[in-house]
Length: 342
Ligand code: KG4
Ligand code: ZN
Image 1 (cartoon, protein in one colour):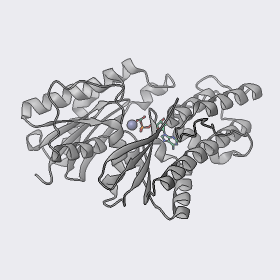
Image 2 (cartoon, protein in one colour; image 1 turned 60 degrees about the horizontal axis):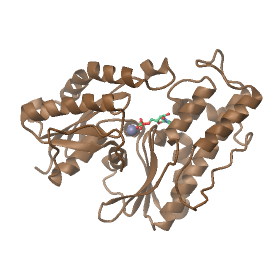
Image 3 (tube, helix red, strand yellow; image 1 turned 90 degrees about the vertical axis):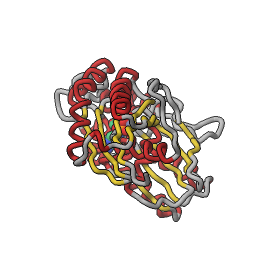
Image 4 (cartoon, helix red, strand yellow; image 1 turned 45 degrees about the vertical axis):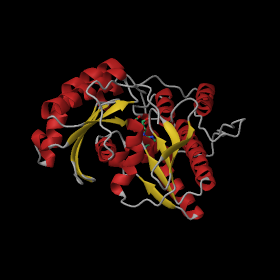
């Protein structure tokens, strides 16, 4: 079974997603986002998320199979995210995948969502010269991972508080802008002066390469309070020039902090490639700056495409494919692990 037909299922947060892969080829990749629902509340409401997953999941899987031109009976295996994420949301995907595995008598593959983000870059780039240092930055997680010559994954840094995407979301919310905040900040930042508000990066007293974003968030809050820039959500008017300057300063400071960490660690590891993955990898400035610094360091640079950066099931099926090749199938007693780490 060198090119297995695998259905991937993802429901860890607010995207209900299903995808079909034949080998490494994506036959379909369907994502039903709940952003419109959670936008009303300025963030993900777990109870609503699980209910909407329940409503959507059968339709999404059906569409993924139809777009791929295959039937349930054709599948060789089903891969599902079992953590990290919201427990109620995870359970919807897990129960559905288990039902398919049981009814069809095919292997169930338990996928770590973070490994999905990490491997997403490899779906689009056949060869990524190792050692690789990959920045996984999403709404729930931020870390640096080494992929060595033997394809082993080693975590080199993590965040000590908020995730990068969470910081973008909170800053946008503070100024009364929408959800998710990352794309909004990305769009508005070029209309502001990014040197207007000094936001120094955190210093780790132990010299570690871990991330921390809460200091940026607090500094933005203080500045917004001092200048009267805070707005209830949703803001009644377009953001002022001062608000745009603050957003620009925030984005530049956070991006420079992440790029510096990424390049310092990549250098120390003797990396041949650096990668960006996770929803925050959509950020235009992060993509540009990381590409520039990688080129300067003589390293290969790969950023996941925007379609595969956000939560999707193609990356879940890809990790599933690797598990299947190694014979690492999951029992039907599989449970959700909301706090799973990588
Ligand atoms: O990977 P993802 O879809 O879901 C999680 O696993 O969390 O990431 C979502 C996060 C959100 O916090 C969102 O604001 C952020 O990715 N994001 C961005 C951009 N697009 C999405 N952050 C900065 N700039 C962007 N263009
Ligand atoms: Zn994610």
